[in-house]
Image 1 (cartoon, helix red, strand yellow):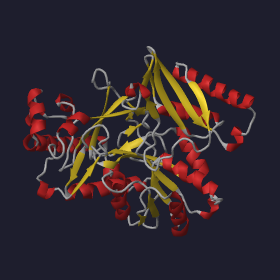
Image 2 (image 1 turned 45 degrees about the vertical axis):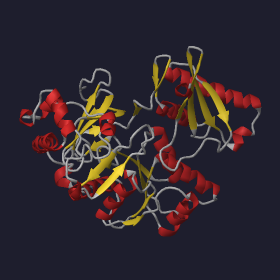
Image 3 (image 1 turned 90 degrees about the vertical axis):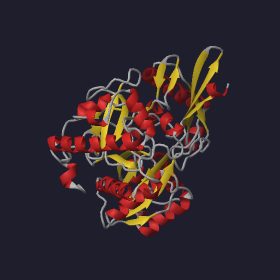
Image 4 (image 1 turned 30 degrees about the horizontal axis):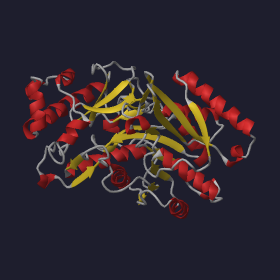
Length: 433
């Protein structure tokens, strides 16, 4: 199913023309309405009239998360406050929150993008969509909410938390589409099992999972435990929220909705653009945002772009599942390590529960990595020798993949904190010393 066939299957040449028209309008908007953007463009010696083709995008300066924090709260808004009808914001755990504003047209476009996303799962007017992303300043809950209403679905706006109640509502209301983080979906599956509830008691068909990187191995785990189609979605508050990109049932990359966003991949060190097929940092330029447009925003997300056609018929460029974030990455003795690599090993081995924590420390001048892995009650009751065998096998597999030695520590069931939002995967004790 395709929600907006004319735009989602637009021929590439026509799409490029639409992008250029919207890019010129966006650059003109920020230049004349946002002093911080105007100053950066003047420093780069580029003006709106210099944007004559899509290749000229590379002449524009990057926007960083620090730029957004420095402009707190409304310094990067490109529309007057009388036109801003909603704001969202990040948690601000490492400084000022990043505040984003939406005009009425922005919210209308956002609903359109989520309608496309949900339609990718097969959702429609007969669907019951349970939204277990957090509502409030976080963009997840309200972002998905209005898109679900746009397609005519029945919305269950339960937000996150109170998991047993969520499961009861899921059963009683006949929920068939679940929207939440993948780690929370896994926690729900565990809780259903603990409650003694058979999967047959539920009508779940699909889930739209995002807000944190997750692996193909995690997809297989979710699809097995919940018996659903697990679809990866992508978005970030700074760009619009959820709705930037979505997988289709082919599950061969996420379609970026290019009539609203221009994606790039750059080398995070040199900041030079990379060609299709090469891994690097995702960069986005918004094309239709009125309240809070961003130009060449560095996401810190690591991915790859693909231009080959998709069997589903959509013509927009696809991005690979996020491999990790440059700001989640830990460097151990010069080696870059992402939590998703550890997740992949654990789920492939299937010897433990899929809950883990990377603990990074320093002994003298040497960085150390310890991986805490949760085991089941059955494994915990086994002989000490068996537990040691499991530890050593996981350690060997991690060393083979990562190229560094990591000590593996098996921990008791339920000892690693569960998250109702984004899962915490890394504790870096080096930053505390």
